[in-house]
Length: 381
Ligand SMILES: CC(C)(COP(=O)(O)OP(=O)(O)OC[C@H]1O[C@@H](n2cnc3c(N)ncnc32)[C@H](O)[C@@H]1OP(=O)(O)O)[C@@H](O)C(=O)NCCC(=O)NCCS
Image (tube, rainbow, N blue to C red; front, side, top):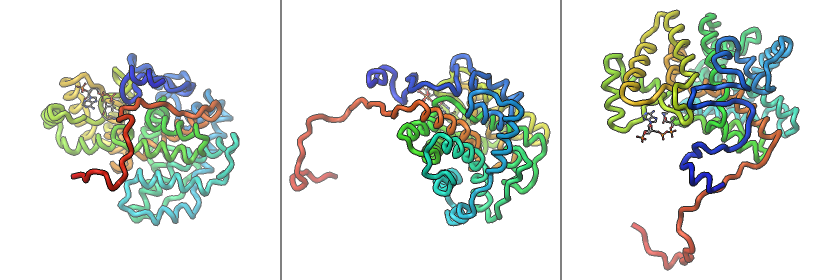
């Protein structure tokens, strides 16, 4: 095993770390499929709720099953009052991702199935987490702005209800659709860093909320989920379309990473970026607010002219979320609102066929070092 890592280099690139029947990626051809169904088909025809069923159960639901899942999700959105009170105690200066990570852990302590790790309880907890992560994100946003939480509306879809809980206004159809498709696109992505973290935790038979907390901690970094926020900050820094070429050239010359480009697996365009570019344009045209979309296009063209790098899922998420009125530091939590569907599917799959994940390292430190008593150690510095 250590031999395989030595051959393939750092970051476990090209290492197959386990089996999974949830999603598959063909990095060379730019194909992503959930349970064998192409992501473009799902983006066009499906909904977040349907994708939750697909990821958790392995196939598309019948109409009755979908109705039931919609009802289950909608009826479990509220979080206990005590959880809201704990959230009120967190500093408003905490990053929304830090708050969300903390609050998912807190939610675990209040879960009606806490302490029950049987297969049915694990499924119930997984479904509740999918329902409640959106509520927690809206709660974090409302409370840090000194606003009262908006109770979930069970008549709305997951996407529409999330936007409603954020702003206290029912969204237009076009905004609901844009977010719904974005949630479909972000729901799972094979053994990405946060999903792998969730699986490592689950493989110890840790409980579902613990595994999702590990995933959230891992999603936060700018090389993973944090990239969508970094893209927005970059677009703000670029400022105007005519500044894009120079900004990109200088960034690449300075060996800076252009956020939202490149991918550990895709060697061609990320298929999710194709859908998000289209959605971002649709929303921009509908609202008449094209500035962020047009700027994104110029940055994309400048990067492509300079280097063989394609946009990834995070690049056009930024302009899309911005026009949806989502604050920049909420972009990564919004990613989590969707990815929790994948994380929990992976936790369930891992535990159903578990073996503790415990790789080896290649030791590169010194060997046979004698122990020197503290009084005989040379002073440093
Ligand atoms: C996602 C990412 C970490 C994958 O990286 P990786 O598989 O480890 O690829 P590497 O870091 O080995 O990069 C390979 C080459 O492409 C370059 N590269 C990759 N992504 C780049 C980017 N976004 N901007 C500039 N150069 C980039 C690297 O500098 C490296 O060039 P070199 O060979 O001249 O040193 C990387 O593309 C990145 O940092 N992207 C920006 C962050 C981001 O958008 N993350 C979200 C991922 S969905």
